[in-house]
Length: 109
Image (cartoon, rainbow, N blue to C red; front, side):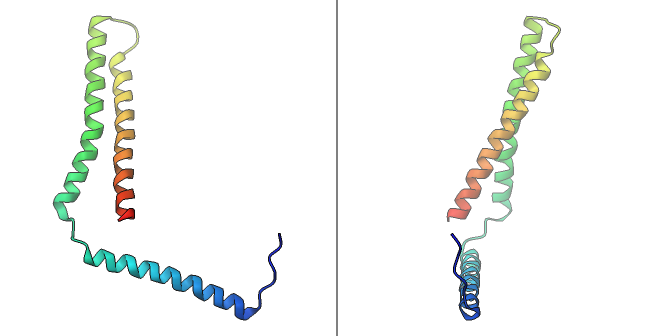
């Protein structure tokens, strides 16, 4: 459906309302940021640790399982390498999940 033509004054009013709403949202976010406690260095290191371990543990488990399979049932395929890559992939998905969840919590609050 075609939108009816707006008069210049109506158009300016709508643009001003949209601008005012955007500025109000940004100002509320700025005020909220000032009133919240500062998470600081230790919080950042903790988050980095969670992300790091969520990648490292599946990677090490995949490598260990791959080495065990290679030693138990020798084959022409390197299970160590395949499971190492699989572990890295699963770890990255896990880290992405945790970062996404933390970001959503920050945005929600």
